[in-house]
Length: 304
Ligand code: PSU
Ligand code: MN
Picture (tube, rainbow, N blue to C red):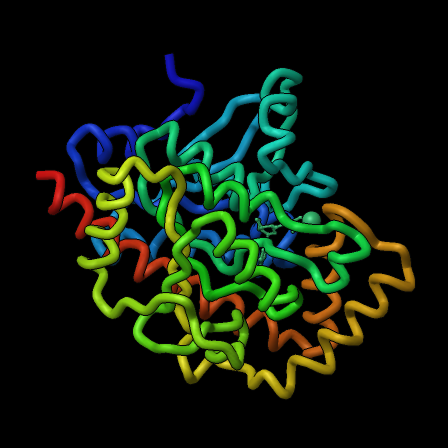
């Protein structure tokens, strides 16, 4: 018995060993405003199909964990207000009680692994928040990368996080952090976090081989591929840093905590950049979808 309900297209692709790329839904419900969130969700799915893979957007709808949504389901999620944000801790409760909720990186990885989907593309992962030495706010996404065998393509850790601490935790957890095509660690809206990435790979086929090599070595967990935002869509770090500092200070002053922190910061930065942060966010997600599709195609080749 499987606890993930596959769309007919996702099921057919998996049965035929064709490439599939998982997508999360928290980016739709909590990461971007309507209607840009819906446009982004549709565009990302189209981009994955255009690059030879089948998209599998993950969400819990009326207690059912889905991989592969209909357009009506995407519309409903994009318009929904007060939808639950489901991470590892929340998934089973939401399913047992018939809730509807969007899956974070952690919960999407869980669903992907259950379904047999090896690659997942998104914008940014959760990480260690600034001030974590006081708040202990460390995303469950990091633990998930350490235990669930999915290769996650993201644009690096978001600059709203404490990036050096996030890297330290990932190292402790044994998660490979791989910059794609450059030495520098990308920082979401900017191509360079000002830090060297622990690992670098330039070839989707090699990333696919490394994924299977981890399994062969009996190492649990996945890989984080940090794909830099396209140069033409980048917002310089020097532009973002003061705005991030301001948004973080506001979050602290308003007592924003826990799950609400990331959505608060993203929506404040949207306002503080007059929407430019959102335009960049959409460009980097599309870029990650393309690389995710390439890696998924290479993985399928290796298993034929
Ligand atoms: N980064 C974004 N947009 C998002 C998120 C991250 O640019 O919407 C979401 C992802 O779903 C990620 C989650 O898994 O935020 C992390 O939340 P937390 O820090 O509460 O674990
Ligand atoms: Mn958190």
